[in-house]
Length: 194
Image: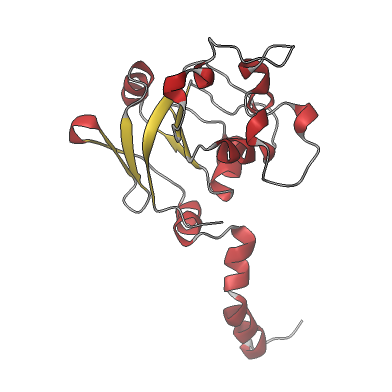
């Protein structure tokens, strides 16, 4: 996982409420443990018709959505079953961050563990982002801020451990592995033995 200190990019708005993990990536595509190649299945049933052709009305199929790296989702984004494939699909599609006024806890935790920023903002900011798709945003993970057009700065919170792991570019296992010397020193020097 690469360090995530800053995300700069344009937004695309998917205002639909209650987008669940099966809409993000349908269960029939959960046949791999690889993180690559899943982007083509992101929002598959919303993006494509039964014959496999693109639905031109779907927001990600519009020309102005190409290259957007920040997804602004409707309220309660990522609800449903737990699956790490959902953030994997979004990352592989090209998203680096998801912003909403409410993000399901399990999805948010899975996203942050895999290097996808999952940011909850206040309802007013959320409504503004949904109403103004395609704006440039600068997300600063070190300072927990989003800079919007007009130099408007919005604060957000991240769990301290998740923030540390994002900034260092490590997952939970990588964090523990980085502590190997301290763990060994503790084991060697503790006054009691198991």
